[in-house]
Amino acid sequence: QVQLVESGGGLVQAGGSLRLSCVASGRTFSNYYMAWFRQAPGKERELVAFIGRNGVNTVYKDSVKGRFTISRDSAKNTVYLQMNSLKPEDTAVYYCAGRYYSDGEYRYWGPGTQVTVSS
Image (tube, rainbow, N blue to C red; front, side, top):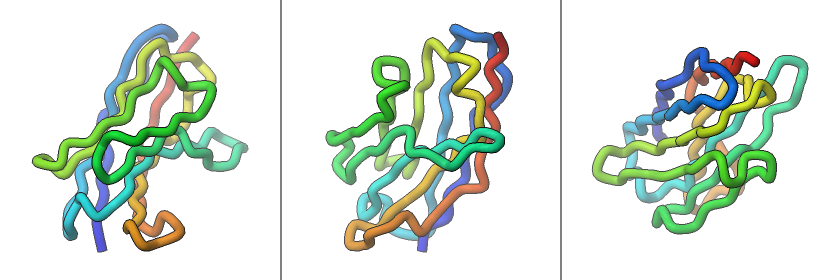
């Protein structure tokens, strides 16, 4: 299995930027599809961004398109989420998740990192 640890969260004013990082260890990173999810208080966890194994294919939640960018660095076993033009509604705990290429679900999760956007 793979272990995931996020970093980079914090408090930022609306309009600001943050870059989240997620380091993977334990297994061959390239065998995993990777994604960022988030969960705000009182809400269900939602998919924010997805990146394929080759780093080319990406999918974004509509509300973050044009503001967030997901990327991965295989040499560093790391996936990133660059978040620009942040809004208060982006406030949530952000989770990194991994899905083995032959699996139908995300089985591997990081502990999460808090992102708070003040207005």
